[in-house]
Length: 101
Image (cartoon, rainbow, N blue to C red; front, side):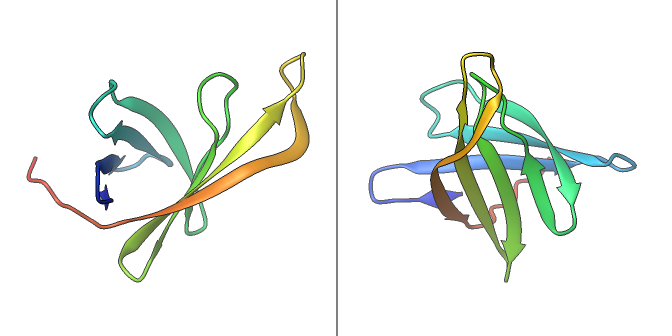
């Protein structure tokens, strides 16, 4: 959960036993429907590759009990390929909130 003065943003990450990926659900502020993406595990990072018209490049990493979520815009050419140029980036730090299932 990431809180600011005016809104709260939430994400849900679930690991399935025996799988090499996690389900990453961006709940957001609750104004729009949640979006679920597949994140692959690479070392100590969860990585969600960019998909045109779907999502930006996303990395998630736990440091000292907090989730650091880094996003970077990916620029696309007319053929739907990445241009290699890096767009703007952003980092948010989320606090862990556990819910009983």
